Amino acid sequence: MKNLVWLMPIVVSATLILPACKKNQEEPASASQNNPPAPSTSTATTDKMSDADLEKAIRAKLEGDDALKQANLSVSADADHNKATISGTVVSQEMRNKAIDLAKNAQPGITIEDKIDVKPAA
Image 1 (cartoon, helix red, strand yellow):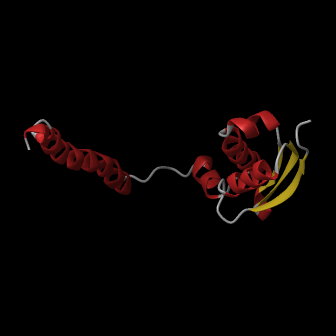
Image 2 (cartoon, helix red, strand yellow; image 1 turned 120 degrees about the horizontal axis):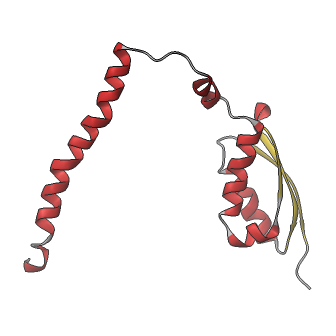
């Protein structure tokens, strides 16, 4: 019990600070209801992802893995049809499967066309 005494001020502080943070986040939303912003192109683009945005999202997932980053895979995306093609060469079937899984996690419901060759290192 003596070891946990230092934890008490942190817990009390967190319980006081976190509700205040949430309140501050809600205030701008209520203010915008009174004065709605003018429509902008940025709100329209957030609803629909472009081909380039989808490619970037997939590349970011692939480059998050060091081995796949070195494989230098190519990505081609079609956001209208929610599909992408990945091509290139990896050294194992495991890396191929990982690349496909990571790409599928970039966008919900995406279809991945796999054109990845497996060539073990000599």
